[in-house]
Image 1 (tube, rainbow, N blue to C red):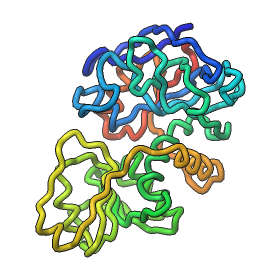
Image 2: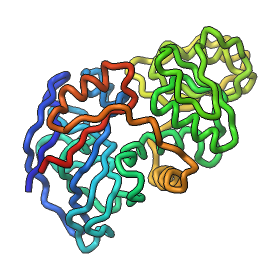
Image 3: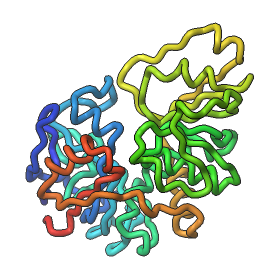
Length: 312
């Protein structure tokens, strides 16, 4: 069995290749992918060659961790059922080609336990569940507080803001690009130069800009927290005295966990968390190279998805 897959042969060199698939075991499911999302965070770093040292890093590789599709075969101990629509967080089933993260393919093989079934009505919006789980893990999991300032109004920033509103908050979002200041519901989006507030209790940065830390610390209330929820390709540093005066806390939001994915799936299926308006661009998978370049180069593109339904 084989599949058509996106392969990053080296930085900025992307091709569609037909790859042999690792045979499925009794614990695996085979999923025919319908749509996969393009991440403008980690995948942009992989594409550009700026990805910091990371487990499994190396070329050639199959990217993608935001895929949805239907189970076409299910092992006896996989827990899956043929015909189910599931979210796929990536796969490692391409032989010598690395699966980092391995979801951008027409067909994948992976343990059934790594997939999650979701409501048919979500359709292509299912690709957003990984980012929603990332947002949930940063601020909605037990023991963490919601942000009152979010830096960046891309998809992740919007999801964090929407989850804060669901939790009863009214956050402010900083966005320097005027074209990205629309789409707010229950929160405000402002140019940071127009915001004079310096008593934020919790600031969430999703910009990935390693130079912002001093600016954010200066906006904290005493005892406030900065949460780093972006992915940074440069070292982060800060001037100590302002952080000392505020007794500032800095927290890194790690990768989402299965319970985060289940939580946002339930919120989306119930209608409490809207995923509307976040997918702005679509492309046939056969035009993947141009789609990736658009996703990384067009500021108007919030989320690009590849359509694999015509591939086999």
